[in-house]
Image 1 (tube, rainbow, N blue to C red):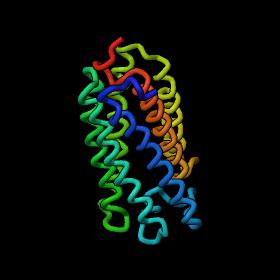
Image 2 (cartoon, helix red, strand yellow):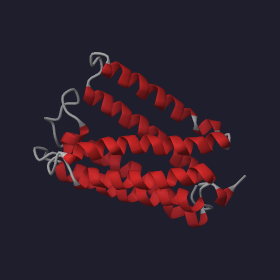
Image 3 (cartoon, rainbow, N blue to C red):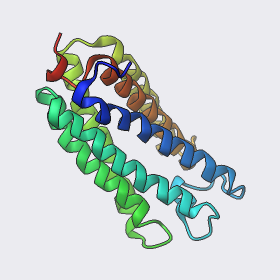
Image 4 (cartoon, helix red, strand yellow):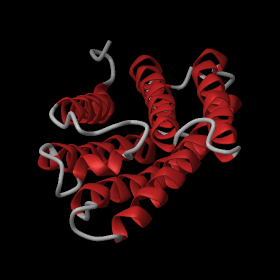
Amino acid sequence: MFEEMGPSKPYIISGFLVAIVLGAGSILSIVLYPEWDINLNSFSDLGDSMSPSMWIFNGACMLAGILLGIFSMGYVKFGKKYSKIGGYAFIITAILMFLVGLVSKAVSDTHLYFSMAFAFSFFISAAIICIQNVVDREWKYLIPTVIAGFVIMVTWILYLNDEIVKYGVAQLICFVGAFVWFLSEAVRNAKLGFGTEREN
């Protein structure tokens, strides 16, 4: 899959590494913190001072932030018009992800603002890149985005409606939805390239 990617290869591989590091770090953190309850706790609690997996979770966020920054540069260097803009937006997202781990809940209440800014920035960046996929008529890569977006929207409606869905569960569903989109986009880039480098 990676043989023909040329100079964009490191950026593409870093995208898969983001998913591996963040996914594995989160799962390991949950396993090592049996007191963590998805109905009562947020993901940020995995990085709190009470968490035995504090260093794992926060370290995973910082490392994933660095890798996301590298992945984002692929859009900036090789992307078409909208994906290039999305790449710049994702660089901001990468910085915010790094800060989520660096300024953890154990360090400062500012962590909450970094977390919220990261989530908002991620979805804006992804939306911009999806515009490029629409322009390029890459419909099959938009299906995971549509499904994930719909599920996330319904989840937050249920959460805001008398907390039918608990906050921790809503957070997890959003995390999985974003994860699905990110992996789909990483696969798309591995097969087609970031944009101008491999135009059809």
